[in-house]
Picture 1 (cartoon, rainbow, N blue to C red):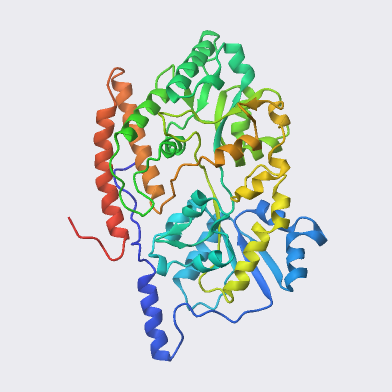
Picture 2 (cartoon, rainbow, N blue to C red; picture 1 turned 90 degrees about the horizontal axis):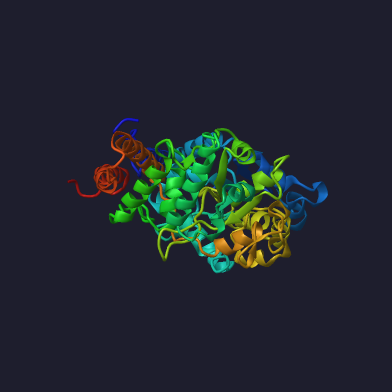
Length: 474
């Protein structure tokens, strides 16, 4: 990877197109940038997942779509696109506000697409601010605050969350017992790593050099960013500003490097490909994985999960005050700013995702809705056969444990710069691993700190470049 980020458009990247359109509109006696099209008696929703589309269509006469149409007299067309196609088409429509293409009433957006849509100022984003609508319908006090904050920019709620995605560890209980270690009693990452090294050494002593304790990327920052999130650490804060330097970032990276370096490394990458991490777990190649609730759903749908061999626990912590969980992934549902009838669009959004009918259908699944009141449903309180009806502390493993963890999410919100941060952290991780290979005794905290300082300067330049109005130059 090179030392420079790829070029990005400035945060005000809609402005040149907007000004041109407004000028042409003024000359021709046309309308303003965000004039809404004429309302119709049908609505359209764009999704990036065929599974999401199936959940809305499921049930034929009693599907959510059918129930909505009977109750409100408005038909709904569901358009399922790939993530890339949806993002490309929506970006083009937002950037060409006078286009005659039909706009969707409601759009699902995956959290990885946040940057391109949330980089402009709130008043220029392509989504409709929902503050008034959620205040009048009382959703603000019902939605989990940490998840609502994820889709809020400059005080404007630009979309509503569909999920929580708390993260736990799922591990092979039988393999731990075989190696004589117990991960359920390790409150800190230091103690967990010590037990994980014992497990790794046991495997090496028995000729199993390809068996590791923990799933950890060696050339990416996925799990590293989860560990930072646990501690409330981020390089760019929720306001899109460079966060104050914190020595714990360097210390966490140094610990991570030692976990994935050398012949006795306790962690390694899971197999690449959809669901292949389950095969790693089943074969014992990796004994423990970071598991948000969507991974539990994947595991439950697998044709041969190792039932009775699995256990589950919260994440260990680095120090007192850290969260025993974090959030991995997420989906927003929003309303494009040029929608014909915002009130009807919001009514559709409410019914399909937050109505009693919608919540009842979700209660049998593993992915938690962002509404704490819904977690009282008996489906979230039952013992879980996948974990042999075992408990972790007072809670059954599975959905019940996720409910407890969801109440302890750290106050960290994604930002438009997270992809840049992940790229820089991946580069720093690679450089630190090279330092460790060259010197097994080096204290990595100080050199990693210097690499982080250099990255902070790079991030500062990119943030300044992308904001409008531009900040003062150096």
